[in-house]
Image (cartoon, rainbow, N blue to C red):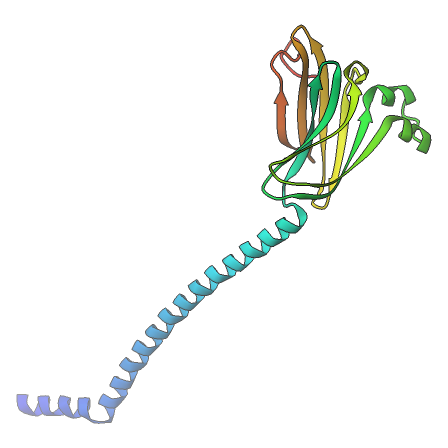
Length: 206
């Protein structure tokens, strides 16, 4: 009886049912292998896509200047000052212009905006290309004639716009300055010299 049962099972394994079972097993193994290969391929494709995106982003940043910016500081020489434009960031900035707004003169015109008043209170400098890690020095002026309320500087470049507050004050130890650069509501840089005058609560009058 037992031998007959074993023979019947062997017939099932060897005969058509066995082939069907073997085919099912091979199909499952093939599907598992294909799934593993697909997962490996998708992983490799994702890595390549990320590298391509990174290279594309880097290329775009090299052409536009990326998220970099510049600012202007005052180079003091006795009672003379010169404008020193400093580039911050990895890439060069292109097609840079700086529009200086004299806050003292802006108060004088009392909001009466016209071409004449804009010319009176605004000064525009074309800076061209600013190379990363370098400074560009331009112009000369008398420090005593610097606006008492300071300047607001609006920069435009190939990568967009940003602005700067520039304040200057004479102290017992010479001229001190305060610099704040912003893009929209984000503060990109804030530099305030020691001994620069502050309010009673320690703030700078921007």
